[in-house]
Amino acid sequence: MNKKIIIPGERIGKASEYESGKGTYINNNYIYSSQLGKIKIESKQTGKKIIEIENKQETAISKIPKIGDKVTCKVIKINPRLIKVHIYCVEEKQLNEPFFGIILTHDIKSTEIDKIKVENCFKPNDVILAEVISLGESRSFSYYLSTAKDDLGVILSINSDGFFLFPYSDSEMICHENQSKEKRKVAILKK
Image (cartoon, rainbow, N blue to C red):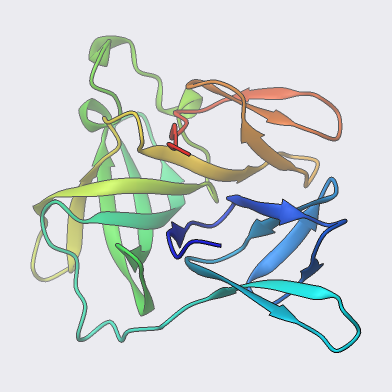
């Protein structure tokens, strides 16, 4: 397999072909990444192949977000004006301690800004990809983020029944268990 960076929630293989290893989970007979990193496949003596995600951790002190960086975040709180997030990864590096991030309503999408309803874009606990657009207040160590590009937005979510939601379109995610759909600002990831 190639050594491209895999993000949390990305499908990496079939459960019928591989055994789920470190940094992965199985859902609907597919194996998904649960962390940022690169795919590693090992063969056991029994002939089974184990697929896992390898992550070279970097400390928060030596890697801090800068303008233009893509960051992996978890939504902490939403209100009609902004979204508060914790930043857990900068580019491909997982941080030991999260940074704080803020997405203002006008930085969620690049079109129809006046029609944006935050609750139709993000929910608490969503995992999202965002881009650092500005440094926030130094005393709070926060960053202003944007999800206005197509490849930015929600990459992993869980519905109220506890099932994973997967991208269905650029504005909806679907549950493979009960086929229910929920509105989100979905990241359209290129294969």
